Length: 207
Image 1 (tube, rainbow, N blue to C red):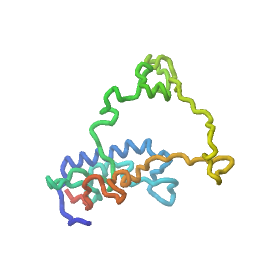
Image 2 (tube, rainbow, N blue to C red):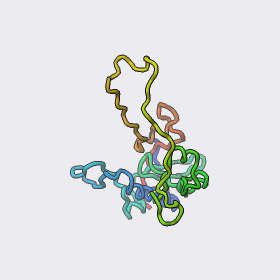
Image 3 (cartoon, rainbow, N blue to C red):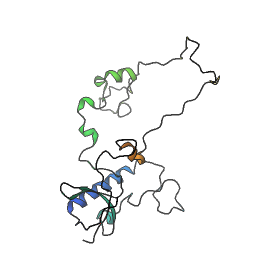
Image 4 (cartoon, rainbow, N blue to C red):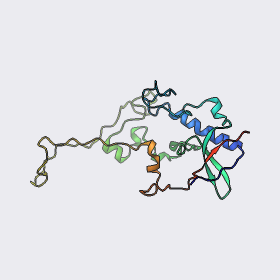
């Protein structure tokens, strides 16, 4: 349901949050969807056309008047706590996930740190080999001990009657799609969001 509009003063906290979100998009666009094009003209664009905030501009980072944004409203404090350029956008955090992991849960850096899973399935150091630091012992990896060989079924009831004589090629597994965040962030099949979502839009008033 569309909520009644109102003017909300832009604070320094709003600008800092907005700039953090845009910075996250700027960092991600360098490695995400490398085949995407950032040209604005749909007639000449070949491939994916990015939103106008990717990459961001100096003017846009200042949150100028008239910018269409989406916000999260904290009802308990009656405050705007998040400002985004899209409805389902990136959330800035103070630390990267890797920084929050204790050392025991981080990937092994040398053979002395290998876990039972590393020793079973194999391991390749983060640097891709010996980087001269001595951490990798000159090793390019650790060969796994798991071997998968041909399988022979010993019972006659394993194959359906219409099974092709040459077998069936299974389709490769897919990966989660970042553009379908509503699906992954829903609490049920109906798309109910995991948390409260502010459904209104907010246009920056002149400062």
